[in-house]
Image (tube, rainbow, N blue to C red; front, side, top):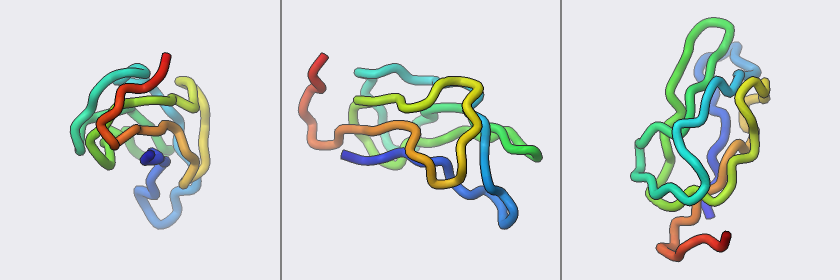
Amino acid sequence: MVEVTIPRLGLTMEEAELVAWRVEVGDEVAEGDVLAEIATDKIEHDLPSPAAGTVVELLAVPGDVLPVGAVVARLRTDGTTPRP
């Protein structure tokens, strides 16, 4: 299982807003695919997948403001199909 977190995009960045998801639970993604859009007080940024796998959990909703390092999604990377 791989956790997707809010990245630090600048030295002073402490949080980001989840603007929109671009995936749903059950979607297959490749490493680097855009999972979501996030925004800081300075920029909007695509949140890329850190690994290839299946989206098994989305842990935040659009509009949530989350600290750097917060887990926002989980990916299954072992090739198995997630349970409904």
